[in-house]
Length: 175
Image 1 (cartoon, rainbow, N blue to C red):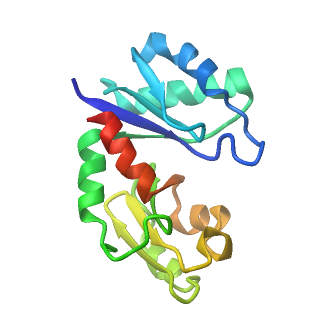
Image 2: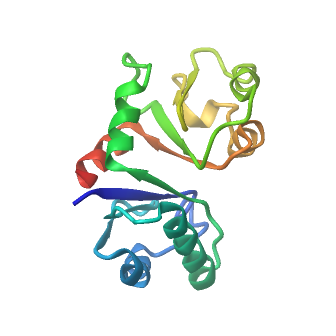
């Protein structure tokens, strides 16, 4: 059986956009089969949906209707996660500073050049397929100029980031 993850953006962060994972699992199980969640920040592990885009749209609608939160839902199959991790270019990066931003689709032309101009010293980025790998500088996410608004505007597509440790765990959980 092939498994996938549905990644929710910016839920249960700092008390905003509350989406109780237990309630969400109950609501989406009829459509997705057996589901589980990993940490409260929006990682839904499920059987690989026959139509991933439709599954993402359905989960987004349920979250909006039931919890009043409109959030992108991004699908990645197990093999996509594995390929993404294998292709990430920053093998010398710290696990806690390296993040994969999973995008809903292709980034806009010129996005990487525009983002490069905003990097703080020590920060690196690389676009690999539909993932933007960000190696944050020593100060981490909090000192970066790559805010959600900047990323959304310059990439031209929504995305949601996970640190390297979480990416590895999602690969294990979808195996």
